[in-house]
Image 1 (cartoon, rainbow, N blue to C red):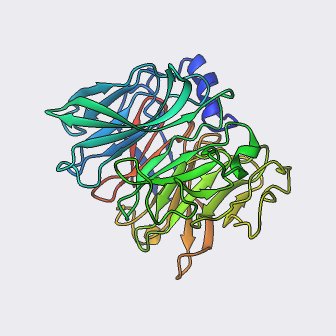
Image 2: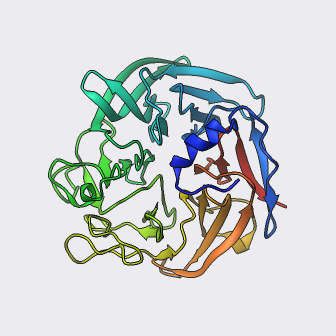
Length: 360
C-alpha cells in the first residue's frame, strides 16, 4: 500500500485496520531480506535497544513504554505515559536510553500530550527500577498545535553523550527560520538533565534550523557527523548533512521546485534530493551490520510512501555520496523507524511489527 506524506499516513492506514493484523511478508531486493522478529505490536514508531540487546519500544497511541526479549518473546510493560494525544502525526514517538545505562537508569521519550498548559510536545526522562518506571521528569515542553502534522519526534544520544531532538515546523514554515524562543523546525541539543550545553551555537537548545518535516537522523559511527532526512511539500525530500548552527534552508519561501531558499546565507543545501516525494523516515549506518562488505559504511534510509529502504555510499571523506540511492529492500508496507542494535544489525519497524535486515 502506497501513501503520500510521512506520519500523516498513520491516520488513513490505521483507519484501514492495519494495526493488529499480520504484516505482508517483505519482498527482498539486491540480496537482502527482512526477518520479522516481533509481531502484533501497537504502532512501534519509536524503538531502541538496551546494551544487552533487549528491545525498548513505545506504543504510539497508548503511551506504554515496553521492554521485550526478542529471543524469549517475553514482553514487559515498564511505564505508561499519561494524556497522550495521537491525532495526526502526534503520539509517543521517540525513545532513547541514557548512554551510561544501567548505571544511569533513565529512559527518554518524546511524546505529544494534553496538559493543563495546552497541547505540548515534551521530552520526558523516566527513571526505571526493577523493570518499572518510578519517576518522571519533564525536560522539554513545546507548543504542539494547532496543526497535527510536521510534528517531529526523533530523539537520539550522540557520540558526545548529548541528547538530540528534532521538532518539525508544525505546518507553519515560518517556524523553521524563527530562532527567537521558537524551537519548532529545529534540531535541538541538550544535556542528559535537560540543560543547555555551553557549546550550543545560539545560547539556547537550538543546534541547527531550517528544518521542515523530519522524523529521521543518525550519527556516522566513523566520524560522529549527524545526517538527517527531511520531507518537502510536494517535491524535494532531502538527505542532509547537518551543520552546527547551520540554516538548512526551509522556511516561508518554500515553493516547488525551488525550496531551500529561506533565511540567512549561507544555506546548507542537501546532499541528495528526491524530486518526487517518497516520505523519508528513519536513517541508520551499516557498521558491522552483517550484510556483506558492499554495504559497509553505507547510509540506509527508509520511506513510508513506497515501502523501500535505500542506501547511499559515502565518499572517502564521508561528506558526500559517491553512489545512491541504491535499492536495499522493497516491501508492500511502510518503513517507519530504523535503528542499529548493539551488535550492529539494522532493524526497522512498520505499524505492527519489527524486522531485522539479513542476507537473502
